[in-house]
Length: 88
Image (cartoon, rainbow, N blue to C red):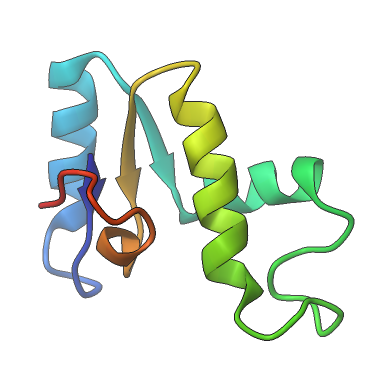
């Protein structure tokens, strides 16, 4: 499940509740950046990354992690990362 919204709209609280209720791992932007550093040779905010790579890097990491466990992804724009995944 992806949860998206503007800062301050309560999406963080919704994500925490959904993850707990669904017994899923909560993935916020900080956790996603940690996964990036272990998966790729550069950080997504690095000037060395190809233009537009952040979306594809996130999609790749999330798709792989979702094969191992259920995820609730809480990030601004998360609903556009994985088309076809239920979004709130």
